[in-house]
Amino acid sequence: MDDRVVIEAFTDKIVEYIERILATCDGLDEAGINWKPEGTETNSIYVLATHVIGNVRQNALAVLGGQEDQRDRDAEFVATGNSAIELQEQWADLKPRVIDALGKIGSAELTHEYPHPRRGTITGLGVLMLAATHAGEHAGQAELTRSLYSA
Image (cartoon, rainbow, N blue to C red):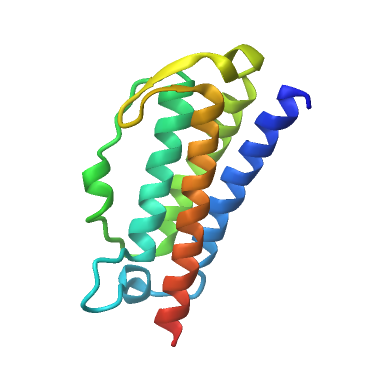
C-alpha cells in the first residue's frame, strides 16, 4: 500500500473521531457539556474534547511537525466551558493545521523515530496510530457520556 494512502487514512480517522466527540455536544448547554456521572472518576464531554484536541495538536504539530509543544495535559482534565462553541472554535483553528502538517509527511517520516513526551521513542507511523486510536477511544467515551446524560 502507498504510504500516502496510509497517512491520509490516519488523518481522516483523526478528523472523524474529533468531529464525533464535538457532535456529542450538539444541543447541550453548559451543564450538559460539563456533566459527568456522580461518584465516578470519568470525564465530561468538555474534558474529553479538550484532551483529544490537545493530544492531536501535540502529536501532529509538535512531535511530527517539529513545532513547539505548548501542551498542558494536566489542565485538560480540569477544563470546563460555557458552551460547545469554544471547542468548535478550537477545532476550526486546529483542523487545517493538522491536515497541513500531516500532509507534509511522507515515507521517511513514517519510519523515522521521534522522541515523544510520554511514550519514549516512537516511529512516525506509531505516532499516527497513537493519535488515531486515542481519539477513537475517547469518541466512544464521549458518546457513552452523552447517552448517560440524556438518560
